[in-house]
Image (tube, rainbow, N blue to C red; front, side, top):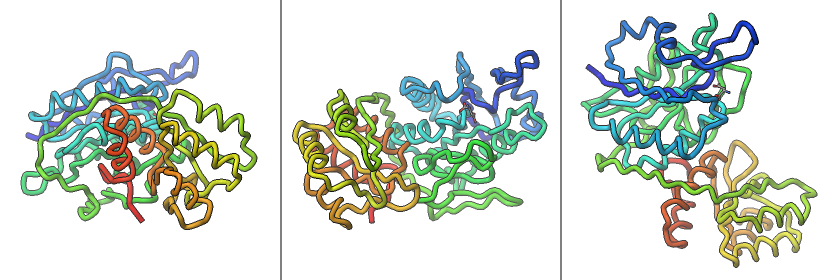
Length: 339
Ligand code: ASP
């Protein structure tokens, strides 16, 4: 029988309305199961790990990412796949982090949750959970069909580190505009096998040391020198700079000088775009060719979530600087496409 390890961290999926206060409060996993009697009819053996404190995903931390990665490591050999029930708000960060932390993954790790609690009459939770289990157990010739960290939501399976939450009101909460959908579930479950990462069968390596020595500089016309200084002169070792269009910034000398000085002082600056679709193209416009010359790193089409967690992971590996920089602009887990 297929064995799936299910981790329950919290989120709307496991909440119920407190009738006295009208506030959503968490359920236990047993209450979730009671709401999905279909699970008892399915051909899986589920091992359940329910976290001691069931949280809204806004309270997620890198320490919890490490716990999830360790649970996967400790249960890897005797399970066929993993499903993580998680709040949707920060699901794309956790999925991106796990994709970097789990090197040589050869089994599915599927995140899912819902926009309405599992106890609600119109809930989207049941379909999300049941199909996530089905995809986590799918195999071809004895090998997992989707051996990567993914998000399953509203009929679609996305690569986790390509995904972001874009809608808090619709069931269709996630998008992955820079990478194709891996699976679509309708009457049939259709796998886009060509888009799925291939496992080379190497042994799983789990990296749990993450660094949060990062900062974010979101540019806007009129940003002051004081704000730029506050970010560049902070303790952060790496700064994610959210730029305009294909990776552009102002050409003002004072601004470029500040970036140059920060890089000379050892800071890593990563250029990702504020656009959700498309890629940074350093050198396409004069503005970004200046950035390229001074050593700003190209983030290509990485999501903000992937950029944050990739830097946490790379800084945590304590690589020599040149190795870290090479890996930052290289696809490690399918998180970027070079143009
Ligand atoms: N606030 C919830 C969370 O992220 C929303 C959800 O689960 O969809 O935990």
